[in-house]
Image 1: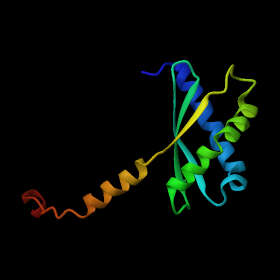
Image 2: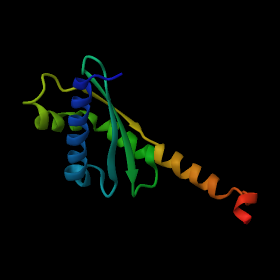
Image 3: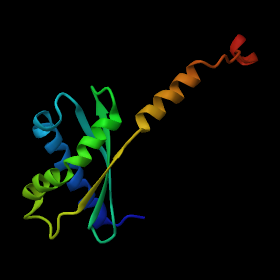
Length: 123
């Protein structure tokens, strides 16, 4: 169970990283649209696990590797954004959030099912 402080801090990180990817993403990552879907903070607020979703990208693993290559630069930009609000800037660990792919796969499976009409539906 996350406490109020962790939730507030994770929302701050999510909002500011989203702004960073939106404003400076084109110069850093080209036409890839990057969305911050979820942020999980460690109890001591020193580590942020950031889950990202990618649009307009061919290979999502390459984009994640590119982000991990530039994570010190991203952390520096984040520090300039939230440096006055927090004591320490957390270490950033990026993950690919595949929940949208999972949901679309479930939809695909469910739409492919052949479910016969029940007796009540026939009346």
